[in-house]
Image (cartoon, rainbow, N blue to C red; front, top):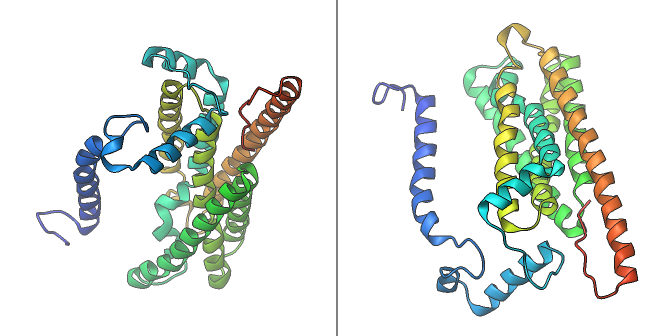
Length: 285
């Protein structure tokens, strides 16, 4: 694709990816339902699947008989006033900053000293390992109903990789460090799930909260795109140091959130013991 239409080959990657997303997004807007009781749901979900979807929505809000409904404006105000929304936004932004190295992944691999072709080939194995780790970590997180330990594990493995990479230019050690640092996407998947588990109801608030958190977190991505300047290479000690600091902030903030949610769960459990009819929501930790 080099020079096709007057564009470099790497630009065509973005053109093609963007075009595919655009083409899929148009029919998805009309096909995907907002909620289980939306009119379009019955067109492609059977009665049993609809009931499963309804049950999941009830579980998200602690089994309430009715999910509270508010206007979009009220949902916006509820989201803006909830400190947990902004705390999570900062957490995810710091996480995005810590994985800023991903935007320079081929550049980092190239510091091993190979030509462009070999460099791109060497990028593949860490990517496959990262995908497998992400799948296993996410599945286990759902199975045991825990979030923070999995986020900390993912970031902890990446921390080891960054320390190794900034400490030596040995080819074998540095390539091994790339495998370790690429464990970070696993925790990112889990922290996004934690956002959804923590901000539950009403639906309008949850929708606004997720939008705010995702949008705000892009500040971390933006900053991360500037932490690997060529003048800091090829060892990129400062760059990896920034990733380590951002990961440390993320772990600390997630730990504080876990303590708070654990305290809320204890309050809910005491209330349930006093009134067995209550079914308070239990936050995932």
